[in-house]
Length: 256
Image: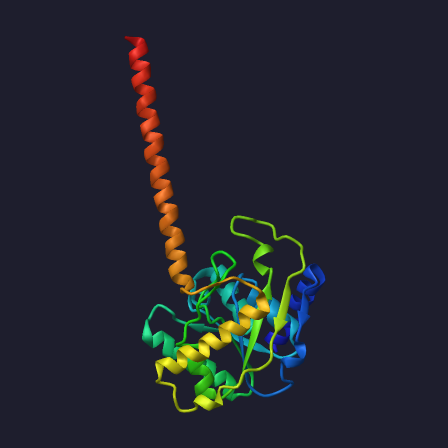
């Protein structure tokens, strides 16, 4: 009930303000379980995709969104529950991963749609990164549900980092044909099978999105970007200190 109310109000607002376009809606089944595997460009992906579908979509969300204290924390928790997000503690290593898989399978066993971002985190630069096999592939094999590749288009341009007001523009959603992995039934523990399933899904997402593919994990790319930024900051600081020292020496020389 809360989901429907939130979907109606938020969905109507998003459609009116941004007018998102959708291709491939016919690939979403009218009923029964299915996994929506999407690229991840923006925080808003989890709102635009559900708002355009008639059926409920449940995503995994960080537990911190549900446990922050205070009035703001309670409002945030209510919002995320209202839009169909499931809290999972992702700081607990393998245990957290198992919890996420169980949550996904439970959603699918109810005959619902489960949304997942195989990259594991948002793309730091708009490119498509290597999918993590532990979540998507294992949920697909454990549930037997078809995997539907989804490409979010231009959602990262609506509100880039550092921009306060969102840009009013038309993002897009491309939905691909369902992928059947029943041929791998019972092979959930085979890491080569998990990798093959994930790579096949990522290839379909790449075709739909037109993104450049990078064969490393997005988390590793974020670390590289952060390290590079840190080195630049240190180099600029050292250069500024050197310039300051040179200026001081020149001033001393003129004074003498």
